Amino acid sequence: MKINDFIWLEEIIDKLETKHRLLPEEVEESFCISPLFIKGPKSRITGEPGYYCFGKSKDGRHIFSFFIFKQSQKALVISSRDMDHKERKFYEKRK
Image (tube, rainbow, N blue to C red; front, side, top):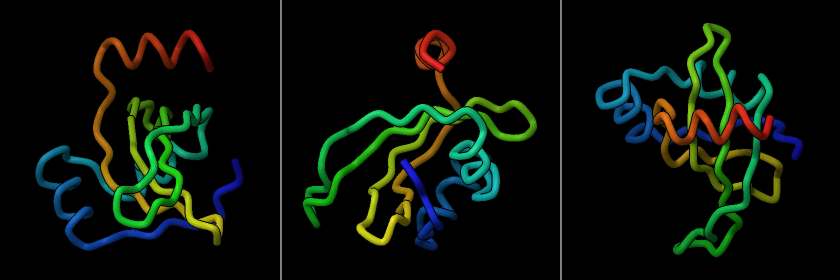
């Protein structure tokens, strides 16, 4: 999957920073450093394909994200957080 750019909504950035203590830059890094993309559910609003991304930041933080893959090859990030133990194990086994 080739992602050319990211689309960030202000409310998503606020949630990432306050609830999950993540910066958008860390999330973007996780899409570039050994990412594992898995097809998820379609967007209920637009019907566009949704995907999960398992990846790492430059600092080694394991990050799980859900995003919509736009026709423009941009990722609209819906949510991101640290992987839980089960997700981390899944990622390490498949990467």
